[in-house]
Image: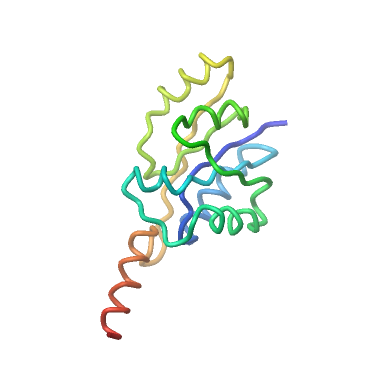
Length: 143
């Protein structure tokens, strides 16, 4: 069985997320999705609208997800050790070096391959930040 691990904040679920998760799921038999902790999201300049428990529950409800878990605080590789993935997928906009991840996995005794998923581009909203910006513009017009 091939276990695939996908990660992200998943604050405002949109078609780009669905594309990422669908493409990730095609690479194996089980898709484990790691939802970033609030503290991790904030440390990476994200300010989620939904808290980590709500985001976890939303991701858990997606039929393409076999299992969803919260990431560990601080050390992202603690989560990798816990999941033991054969493949880790990265979204097009995730700023991680695949070689560094593969090397760290090998140091932990894992033969994990890292795959970057293609960008989803169809429609005016390709990311959560664009959706958030549009929502805020609409709210400001209403006030």
